[in-house]
Length: 313
Image 1 (tube, helix red, strand yellow):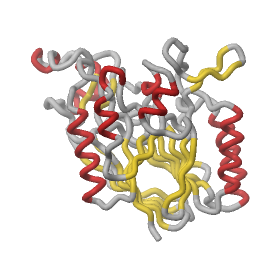
Image 2 (cartoon, one colour; image 1 turned 30 degrees about the horizontal axis):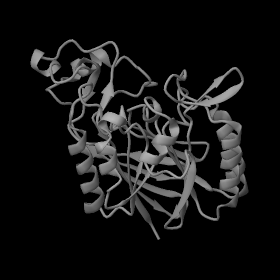
Image 3 (cartoon, one colour; image 1 turned 90 degrees about the vertical axis):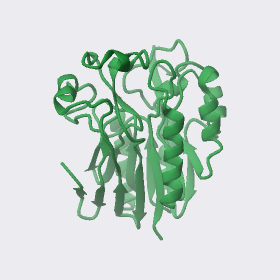
């Protein structure tokens, strides 16, 4: 029987720094999950900055009428300890799994730095290296979790196992996935990540990899100098963001162990940005030739044929 769920990430609720519209965006995400009859919602991290001050939205998220399963992003543990983040998002551990509708969903956490030979989880004051790493004990847990599953598995992580600028020790992850899929084809059928704020879907080593676009904006650096003064006055970080008109999310349907249907969402860049405006600042930050777009495409994936059909170029 097919399993349909909604995925979103990178809401970045940070009043004063970014546009203060994230509560309305969250409500629209929930509304879509209800209207589209999603079984549950998965979050790919980076929900709320400075949660001691801005945590009301996180508490509202926990009142969601659908089951909500979270993984942690780097910004979720930027301003307070891991233990508080786990309690806020009601997570049993920083990495865990849950079984639903004949599938196993495996939540990973790459928010670690390797410092003087020790794996240290991101916390306030800890040096955060780009990409992050997964410690050996979590890799061992991952292999055991996949080995024991009788169901096809879906990986959920903030950082990417597909992108070169994702999980730094991703080759170790891929070796575990290779062994699992050699034992039983399509044991791991899908990996979804946030973090990079881009829209991309491909099949890599027999696994569908979805690079999920942000529910809010694309961060840019250097800043865009073309906003009107009244727009720049909306928030401190306005010049560093290309904001999307819609709270982007993906409705994902799994069929068997080889068919995946992804229904995205279409929006526009806010504040009348032109294609030329976007091109002038979208110089490839974390993009790997993936341009900033205000939408998530529709994708149809067939793992048997290793094909991805998408709705637009």
